Length: 542
Image (tube, rainbow, N blue to C red; front, side, top):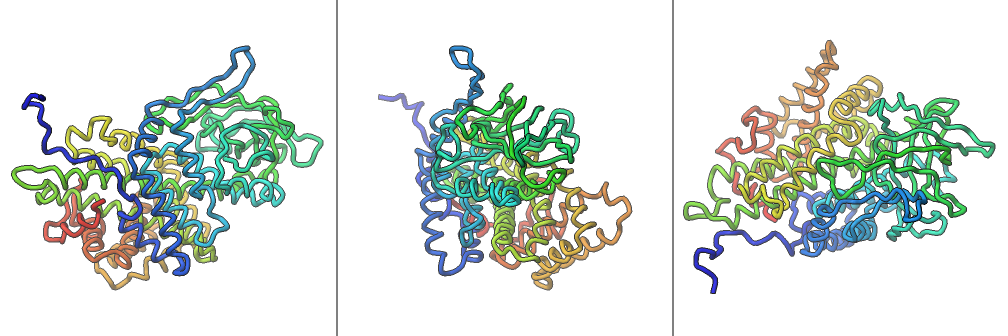
């Protein structure tokens, strides 16, 4: 018989056995907006299956195991031969295999493919975020490869495949393949034009040998990598396979794996090339232009992935407060906690709505939508990813001390939260890219103003914020030093426009009041008390 002092009470049940997709109202409503009616039922079934898997106890255990047992580098085999292999826990392979099987690397040829894939990526990130890295890079490599039709014809079907094959073999012998990326080097970081890796042309057209290093190379067990190197004609993009067509290993020396703050399940490596065979992608000297399509797609995935982390943090916080009682009633009903939860829910919904809108722009693929993406993707990447860490920290605090304990899963979310703000260019890079779009591409600003203008007249605070952005743009003196301020305002105005048009009035009202109208504080939980906060929280309940 257990001692009475060890009776457990007032502890919430674990949030498990639920549909991550179906319980996310902002996401399910986005599917109704952006998916053609004739495809909607099938997409709902597809995402519902993925959502139930993501919310299952089994998949949640896979995520915990993959992070508790990080990848291990084996540079040599027992006989002293160089092998350069990274060993992952079986849970990693189960997660990655399920994601590939769900189509999370294929978007470019399916109807509504980008919206479907982005929604799936947002859902599956909530199970475990680290393996999203190879999924994102594999998906995003397609625009770069399409600059070389022959390469695209051979690789694109493998990248879009729903078959996961973990073994390193020639890609011609595989039913599916994954791609990674290696751009940054020790001396340059974000400044890839400072790269020193050399590319020496061979006699065969388009073939080169690379010599140099890469400071960050994610997912080093991928089948191939898009890399940048200095060819005779300048900085150029190359496709570097791990295994050559004859079955021999390409020279790909993994020097070490990074010991990272979060993202523990994923391997990020330092690699050396020494006469490493590669195939040119695009023209010599146009490496940045060739790979920029991949960068843009991965930047959108940064926003989508952050939206997924935010949604999971909010779901955990609302769930905990629903079942936890304080002073004779559920914590969720206490006015101050309700304000915190509502504020978190508004931020999460704004991130989701923006991410899905930009995914839909990829599907539309019109000149106007491409122009919108050129300015809205870096703005969204900047703002959504920056909001992720403070949101997750506040959601963790809703669980109190329980949230600080590893078993809650919240510390893993918090360690993961800053990554997307850094990956594919940190905040300053995104803000400067917004300025670059404003200066070089007038259509981008026109597309942005048309988009936010669709809600003009519906909310006076949004109208005032739009005027404020136009005032900022009219004064170009010292614009670079104000780039973060401008990018933030542009992202907020775009989110506000989308919420005013598509979200329930209580959500749009809370957003416009606090983010655009100045009636909110610097911390979460400072919404005007007069708003319908109970409805906002109820909408976010998982």
